[in-house]
Image (cartoon, rainbow, N blue to C red; front, side):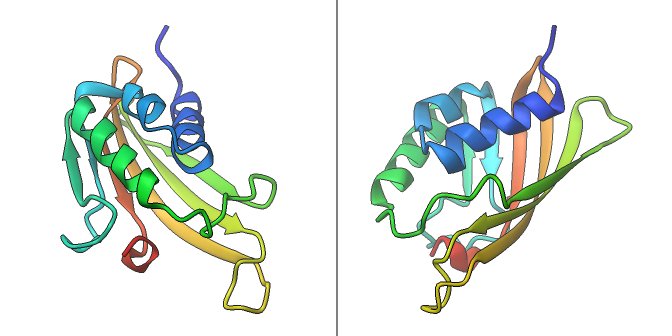
Length: 139
């Protein structure tokens, strides 16, 4: 039985944003999977496009290693998402509002980051993920 969009999405969030585990993240993708962030400038810290499971693994491991840790971990209780199931059973869209506790503009206020991900799956794995988020978050 193939994984549901909700299972795929939750596993992706856990492996990436919550645990920053590049190996677990890469294993969610097909061998030829693509992870791209079209709005990110080519010179940003976050890779603009990664093709293939091994490139995703290496690039995300390097990105996570560069993280200072002061960006915080998302507050799962406050964060929200909605999955939009499309007419194509292999495609879903995630509309996400991620909340980070008290690491605002020096005032201790929560910061909410809104983004959209378009996910194409194949055999229960991510074949192509487009992550649309504010480029300034990763530069």
